[in-house]
Amino acid sequence: MVFSVNSAQSLGGSQKTESSQPIHLSQGPQFQGKASKRMHVMAKPIGAVCNIDCNYCYYLSKQDLLEYKKGCSPEMDEGLLEQYIKNYIEGQNTPEIIFSWQGGEPTMLGLSYFEKVVELQKKYQPVGIKISNDLQTNGTLLDDKWCEFLAKNQFLVGLSIDGPQMLHDAYRTNRAGRGTHKQVMKAVELLHKHKVSFATLTCVNNLTSKNPLEVYRFLRDEVRSPQMQFIPIVEQKSFRTTAPQTWKSNEQLKQGDKRLIPGNANSIMESWCVSDEAWGNFLIAIFDEWIQRDIGRVFVQYFEASVETWMGRKNPLCTLGQLCGKGLAMEPNGDVYSCDHYVYPEYKIGNINETKLETMAYSQVQQNFGFAKSKTLTAQCQQCDYQFACYGECPKNRFIKTRTGEPGLNYLCAGWKKFFSHADKAIAYILRATGNPVAHGNYSDQAIRNVGFATKF
Image (tube, rainbow, N blue to C red; front, top):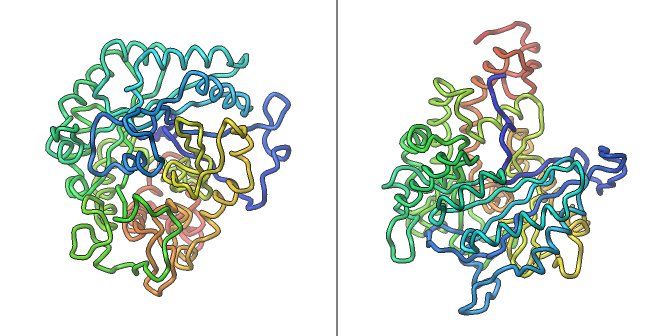
């Protein structure tokens, strides 16, 4: 198969479940004679503290929301770090346990902190179980010693870079307002030099969305990105204080309302956001170049995940899967939240000083949170030809109404549908050409049988 889906460790995501009933572990897959258990936590050992000041960062504001002590950099101390690592390992029964380290900027903790992380992981590592790590960073603090460590311990690095210098430096600046592109490109060279596994994480905002091929070609040719992840930047102006799903229905705007366009007069969106149509156009432009000349050579996460889905497999990405809620987020004081994008007081589900991670991950509250993704779809979503491809996408973006007035539609709906409609035929063609089934879409195997003829289109 020409695609490389799941060939690289993901920096996040979850697995969906077909049932909407409470999870009973004894009924699931087995590992080593016991029920298989797997969870995922995005640990933020330095919280929202960062050494740069990106305009669009949704997490910097958490310093105020979570009441960090003024003048004090929050840090998960060694005692709590050990408790977390022990708890996380003991709460799983799976061949591989993946630790995710994010922030803020986790490298601000220093190399010695992560040397301690690896030391503690080895202390509690069960025989025959693989332990992996991924680390999300802006790259500005990486040097030879860091990269030697990352390579030696086989960390997967998620490197934030938004494309060529002009686009990257527009929003990704240091606290003095200067761009960080040159520093990040130095990190790119160091990662290649030391053969560190890495993926690029590129934020698609109001500027990058207008320059899709410039961004893609830069990542492909200059950065030589082994895996590209594109993240749509979507935030209402109220996001700093208003938690998802607490929006008032009478204040939600209908799809197509001009006040949903970033930069428009009276827009409810932050000016740096991507619009729904621009998101779709961005994906289409890159998809066309990818499928014409880079398929099987360049890994673009969204495209590979879509191929999985068209084949009838579960989408590996939490934002596009049927179920979410497997990716918990933990702050440096041990507070645990339902999701990285739901770090608000309303979605705190406990603290590891008081409750085991396993208990929180499989709690009824968290199960309800996860199943709500597919159980709260609008009628428009339920009737959509491409429901299978996104299941309404990330719930944190469901703050608009359908054109008929039903609340709960995803802000990016029009863009996603535009992309799926465009890619449908090409994905089906490639799957057939490689001898794979086409389970979904308007060119599925069943659709072809229904019209009574085979087609090569």
